[in-house]
Length: 304
Image (cartoon, rainbow, N blue to C red; front, side, top):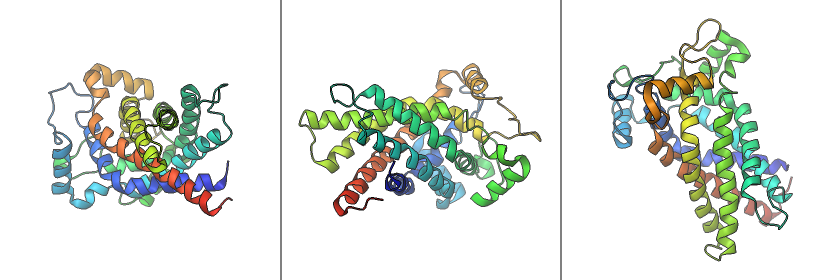
């Protein structure tokens, strides 16, 4: 695995995160409202995506739409450094190709899942802090458990003092299904779609090819990732007792069962459209930036 692939994968995601973080804030709030309450039995501070944007800006200020940006940048850099460098290595070594030399969707799922799992676990503390900061809101529009972090470093310090290193990686194992499903679907679809668009002479220009493949990959990813994303958001945001145990959920399965029982299938897809509007452009931009950075490296021979 080239060091440059690792760095370029991280840089590609950082560029995209500046544009998509406000949608992530809205998505997190929508996923947390009405937590473990039957549909229609609770007040909804956020009545759709547009209303949520206006509500956050009105009550938390415009800066509220960029809450959790610092940990989001660290999270995206780390997870995509692993995901995209592993993907790039798998393509270069033809580990994603079948016996006929064609890109295999199944092998793409495998290598995408592996990259997602490794990156997710390593970046988990930043996803934890990102979720908790993004949920912090003015009292009148607050949803979910409200933490009192003043910054990313303050959050990391508070969590470490209270629960030590295990506290920083709380929920990391439960987040792996989200990473495996989302990353697997994205990477497999991106690689296969790029190959098909070129094979059928539909989109052969490199930049446009990457853009189209990234958009399709992001759409598939948003469908696959929303239910495990809701579970991960709930697990990371919940409060904990003195022993570091969650106040609402014991783990991934317990959270899944409680959401289904209390909120139904609708609860598993809360924030779907916000998720789609975040993931589709973010996926498109990350994969496009990554391909463009790789092309620039090849053009100028910057291998290291």
